[in-house]
Length: 228
Ligand code: CTP
Ligand code: MG
Image (cartoon, rainbow, N blue to C red):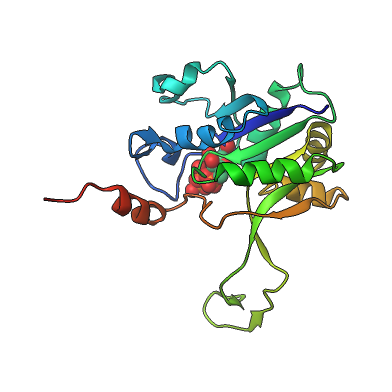
């Protein structure tokens, strides 16, 4: 029976978010975005261990209650997200077998529902590569080379937004990431570029990646206490 592990990519600086600390340490209610994102994987009992990948100069992790959780270990990230994921995979080297599965999840995605993680797990468990959560593109898409004038409308019927978690067989993912010389923006891309066809599993569109401060506004407005 294959085992399941998790990696949380939390070594970014959150430049576009523009806060004085990395966005994963912003609070939503009484928990940080990072704690909520880790909690999404912890909610799935099949996941045995979680590696949280942190910046080398991280100042905030040790302050979190979750830092002492028995299922969690940390390692240091790299320059690009894919370097951070490679480091997370290396940290599992002594325990993960080649065909075990690893869920890779962005620290900046705190809203993935538990049932999406279970659906992903069930979908990949008999697959020899793995797959990702995704949602169909809903907006009409325009192509513009100069960013000023529209050349054409892009057919969106076959287009999907790639979300996380993405869940792959340990050795296939590590080999794919190690083979590539240019960074990839998600794990699936590494497998696609090395000749594999990952599964596409429909997920909840609420599973957004927090990139800009505005991404949090509706949530903060909803959770704000009413003014009496
Ligand atoms: N990430 C990482 N290591 C990096 C870069 C990013 O682990 N070298 C993580 C981020 O912490 C985030 C996820 O990858 O959880 C998705 O990246 P993104 O949303 O781009 O976050 P940041 O890189 O932090 O933001 P920005 O690009 O605006 O600086
Ligand atoms: Mg980034």
